[in-house]
Length: 419
Image: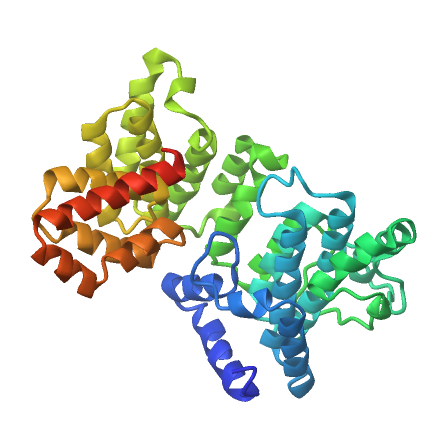
């Protein structure tokens, strides 16, 4: 739509979805997922932000055509958000260089500028505040933001100062990195920024908690900003479970339903167990850990919580070489529309060849899993088992089963029995 310059139509669609986001949790979730990049395959901006500088050019053209479009500015905020994370990496940032961190910080600075403009265009714009809340925790806040929120003028202040200083030491490295996102020293001056009336009073902290308070000022009965906020208050991010529990028990979260409170509590469980192997747990406590995960997989209200528990149980039963329970767990994962990785996809077909050799289970599983996942093996399997090939193999009877077994064996060799 941006390439076709259908700006008004695009704004009308997004404005409608924003308006509806205040009316129900399902509508709120739809808007949240439209603009959330991390671990989200329903993300509207994927093609645009992945286009790099061409995507940024399309966004800027949208802004020029409709300067008061909150979603044109939100799109830019999300563009810089994603680029900052790409510089840092979405993982543990073990290989992130000093120059990459500086570029990420420069992207974050541009994001805050776009966020202020997005909220100024529409005081209902809670999503821009949420994105800024997360980035404030990871990349910090621009040095000029406190002065701006206190009412001082910051127009004309130089931006990207640290990156400029490093550029003098390593110009080729910095210029190559900047070209990746469209950062430019030509635009490294702070513009005249709005100070939206909806922003709460500044309390000497323009970071993650402040921007969550902006979200809650705009949308007091929201839920999904907490889904984004709480993982970044975990111990691995310098927070604590005690702090999170106190937040959940406070008046701030009083509006959340019992099921939503349970979801937040299960985020704490997942933080405790996600990187813990069954072998890391004391023998006398292993069965309790398994029973707890089984209970969550069976009864948790939110699908994400059930998926987390099933993911842990798959790894657990695989470690224990308990093939009966592993096969049962795989089938439950399939019923839950869970994204199985290459390793468990191969296992699923191996088990199915033994238990359901003459049924359509294998083909149906492959079709479903290839649609659910971003892993390569399920897609390869689906190509192998396209309807035409499937019927040809079925007519070949004995050779059909041999063909499947060869493919599974080949896959096991390729992935070495590992994820």
